Amino acid sequence: MTPVERRRETAPARPANPLLSGRAALRGLAGFLLAIAFWFGFSRAYEKTFAAGSGAMTRLFESPDVTRLEAKGGEILLDRRDFPPGSARPGLSGPDIHFNFVLLAALFALDPRPLRGAHIARFLAAAAVLWLIHVVALAFQVHSVYATSLGAWSLANYGRVARNFWAAGWHFYLIVGRFAAPFALWWFFGRREEEAALEKPPARRRRKRI
Image (cartoon, rainbow, N blue to C red):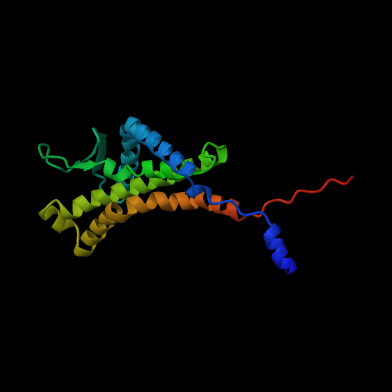
């Protein structure tokens, strides 16, 4: 047996990936249930924040600024100052945009020590980026409504390229983006640290001299 083979046999086995264990599954389930409870309790207040942010972002590109967004009863009411007073205001579904917060929380709960201060800080950073994604997604939805759902007004104010851009962007978020965003944020803010910890070789203990 060569010295290399001896070292391989005597080297301690690397621990299994803690994210693939039964305990991780239980942590993920607990995180999912807690996030669901939090989401139901605070989703209405949360909708007000990203509706305000998206409305402000939309008005930056308007001249004059006419768009008004109001979160009410699980919907984002889309209003324009140039709408006729008696016309209906479109209602956009808030949960369609932000329910993926629950998935983000469940993914971060997989960590072996999910309540560590550093891990919670990374989760909050990921949640802040997810809020920005929700702001942008709502802006795309608003412009998609403007570009495709207002009949002659849409045709007069949006060209073919603009209609396709806003509608495709919103549908991309609905079909792919709202599911991919939590995984991407989890990998960037949380998963990479876990992989680095697994790849780090164990520290050698120093022998005490007698």
